[in-house]
Length: 138
View (tube, rainbow, N blue to C red):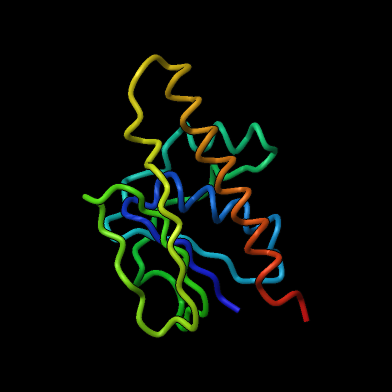
């Protein structure tokens, strides 16, 4: 089963989701991609995932076309109305997790890190819920 986490830049939310999925859903083929990928994974996303013991430093933003077909399950992670989170035709199941983009956070460095950690923790919670709903390993 191939699982895709999709957002706009593939630099924060979808990368964190892929990182958690590789830990909590290792029996699935886990991918992330963006509709308009950024040049690199956001360093703060890498930092807050490292705080959880998950290394996403080798991840890189990908286009949807870079993910092998077929895709069985798609999770879109866009939150703001201005963002583009398309439907993904052909997937057996699609769900939307409307989460704010931590890369848009403003404030002091500590306040911005707090936003990244909050989004990270919500993604982890949802990945654990997804684990309970998806088929287990064969």
